[in-house]
Length: 507
Ligand code: BES
Ligand code: MN
Ligand code: ZN
Image (cartoon, rainbow, N blue to C red; front, side):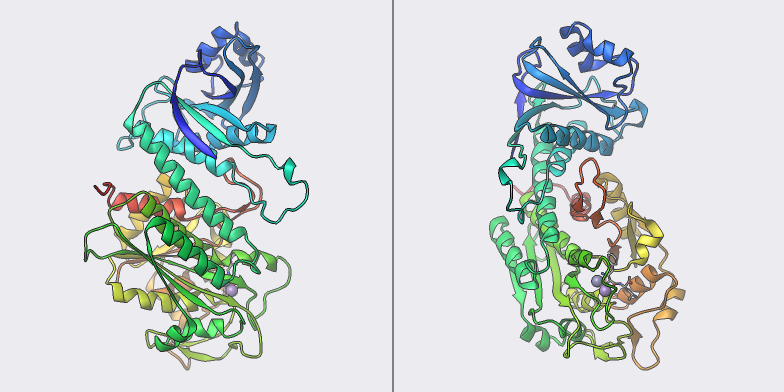
């Protein structure tokens, strides 16, 4: 799909359909008013009859009778002007783009919510950049679908080929908003693909091959550690989880050096369990198929570093993805087993279903060799975070107040919200083992926090935050720019975080 800017007025622009945003109001305003005049008051009538009021994500299709070169106009509601946010614009762009795709249009055009119709944004946000980035992201993310495994009636599958964004004038900010929006959305959609693929395709080996391919294209270094390397490194926790599976585990390392030589990197650690059956502590069979998404943290870590490289961010970044299946077998780890992790700390396995924290423990220990500036891990770690926050926020905890604040802020800006849970010392009590240094389950109370408390023990030598994405990884109903299925959560959040660290482009 192509998305590009075109400088042209609506009185000249030919298209099958033109998307125009409108705030909630009693009558047409801004660009909608201009169109209303050309259509002899037809839009006014629609407002009078309350067939369209500009409510957020409301749409209304109008035929122009060729009074303007566009065959149709799709009005999309932006909600109340006072409540306008970039997230609402992203949604309206998604809603309207998806509506036109469903109509079967292969190409259409959209007007940027322009200076006449959008109030000044919060200070610090570059208006043109933020607006065109949001319109672009909303459109590309909403049009995503996953059709790889459908063999029937493929010709009936709708596909948008081209979106034109109409602009009033050439503008550097608007142009770079478009370009960044494209790169970021493509990275998110790539993560969605990896997660939507079933586990018989998306094995640890597949993830490693994907990472290698991406690295080659985007100018990133990629190294994959094999089981023998893990043994040499004494990654006993990761190996214990991998022991039940016939698929070889992989430890994927991506390094992007956009910053100064020797500058400490930011590290992303992503949980890469390509299928979580629970192991010997077998999960109930109902909904077990959902556990193919247990590598979504890994997908986010791979795709965020890809986006950063494509955006040429001037930072050093490393992504670490421990990848394995978690299956029961005669060779599998068992409840009660004690294993020695790479850090040297011993772990008593209470449940083989608490496997995420095991593989992250070794990845967090591996991260130490980089002397990182900050480490952010992403993991579909606990069902408990769904009980705590539902599906509307990612849980965040960490050992550094400032880092937590910066990531929270990036959450608000990217539209991928995070919410902090307390990581007080008292919770560590629950992870105490009678025979080892720590145990991998701390009981039912505060399951998300005790999981983070477990990780904290392996992240003691650097600034660290943990993101529990178990509640935000999957979309069950479909939202304006998030179709049913894998959300690709974390990519936009991490990129926003990186941009807050440094945003100059390499010369
Ligand atoms: N991958 C699961 C967590 C999960 C649950 C993700 C639901 C997405 C949706 C994780 O490995 C797990 O099984 N966690 C256990 C931990 C328990 C054994 C302490 C859980 O949450 O039940
Ligand atoms: Mn599990
Ligand atoms: Zn899991």
